[in-house]
Image 1 (spheres, each protein chain N blue to C red):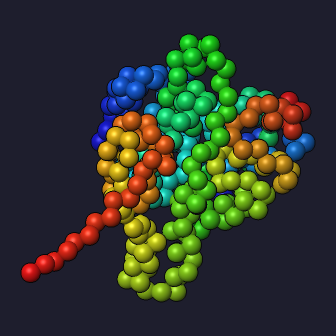
Image 2: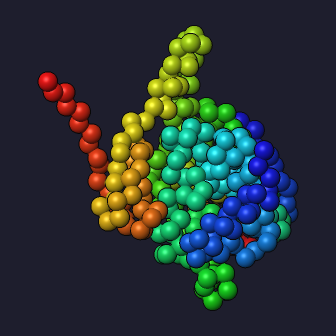
Image 3: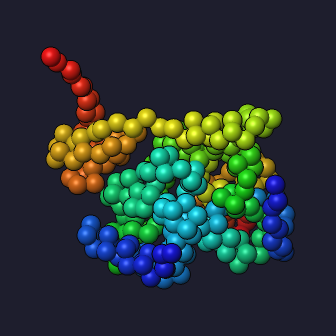
Length: 94
Length: 184
């Protein structure tokens, strides 16, 4: 499973974004993180293989989330569902 | 191949019919229309750009745009889940945009992943067996449903979330059981 990395000066947290290539909210999340210099990794789930999709679903649900996109997982424990500027600000100290 | 302009015109016509507006943010709208076009190209139907589709029409029917959940979402939140269709208040900036929670039942969401499970199970099997299992995974038993309020009839696995004609809720749908009797 190949994640793409976006570099940024705000790199205190490990930020992983699960997105869809076609999703406008996912694009907004990517733009928001980039505009705020947040370092993050992302994967477009719709472009993954069936096996990878299933692994991602299991991972998100094991963290207590639903398989909806965008989903942001911060430091492997805080899960943010949807494009939630307020929650991203609070969690990442933006 | 459907052009982006055709996707836009189709959405505009549908918004006019139902008294909605398309998202007022030009960049956001452009992204949504491109997403719809991309889904139409890869799946042959314009499934919601913000939901993971299975690629099998029987499993994705409820999320083909305009999705089953659009009307209740616009009613409750002023816009649909992906943000393509909005109410007049959102369009005119009178109401603040709020996150729209996913209304699609989880058992339908996970359908997009079921072909993956089938793939894992049959790794060591032959190509013919693989095809059969995938077909089995996508098999959905369809039934006839009618809206007890307006009489709208639909043939699909589950009753619609909302009646597209009279907007009656899912509970207003009843199954039509067909019985064939032979006499003589």
